[in-house]
Image 1: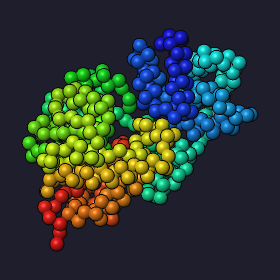
Image 2 (image 1 turned 180 degrees about the horizontal axis):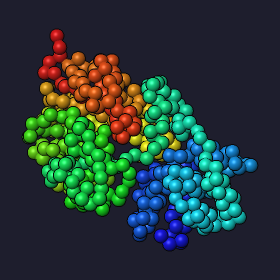
Image 3 (image 1 turned 120 degrees about the vertical axis):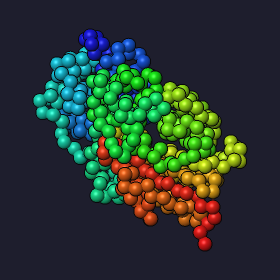
Image 4 (image 1 turned 180 degrees about the vertical axis):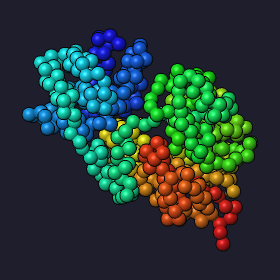
Length: 438
């Protein structure tokens, strides 16, 4: 990387972080705009790594600035604060060579129109290099109300959740059974120098210890491999389906779970819905890449009268919109943007979606409700309330391989963030009895 390219990456990192930290923008959206502007894949990887590391370590870096600066930064210094967090992340979390990180970040301050503060940036980063950043509780990055809720829901596990959520996630891959099974794909990766781990409870999963450029992995370009966390892969294991079964994926974007089901059973008659046409195009791209097909519809799953043809589905997957508290390590900006009022709106939407999914499910059929949330209000409490309304709903416990037992019948399962290297995820499997129990 040239010196100039290094400065450009730091400038872009500061601007992405400024938008996310101070203007409520999505990290994913900002990176989607910024990454294509860098030609070198190494520059793109560095930009992404700096932004993620700065957000994951934000609480400690803010504590350092509060302790080391004589006066707190003002709103007019938001871009400078973002640059300082980017600089600290390079030295602390990423462990980049200090000389390169320091010189490029200091020069970025000048490029951002702050030559008079370049000396301060240099001094603060050199202090970071000498002393490290203050140790803070991992929960400090979480909004207080949300940290309190996690502690209330998972009192014996909350500290582990906060700590795991501040770490970078491993890279999980899914082998496409249509093209080659997991063990064959593992052997191909090993020949190319990529060692992976496998797990008995995850028949299609391969885990790499760190991040790599997935586009360069053998098998990725032809759809033989996809990126999908182990906990998300377990959703497919909750279904036992006949080959021609009618299946609904009610909130399908970005399409990974539908693709997984179809890779296993291409004969399924699967309908994938999403309320957003742009997101549904992503589903189409996902399915095309792995070589499977589904009936795609832009529709609101909570309003069946607007899209349903009246023929019941044998199985329904409702991977519901949620707080995303189980995937903070992958989406650290969730902690900046989430509000307590969001949970009220989300739980109301989830309840509507559950009712609609049940309406279109055939007697004897299976409904799987999943979220990437850790909150009982969205998970066990939500499904327990649904069971109170539907005597004909029978709970089927998928077992300890899916996480901690929870709910009034201890028949739902919750994976907590970081367990077995996986994301936080909730699973409930319900069967629609032909008639309510007597």
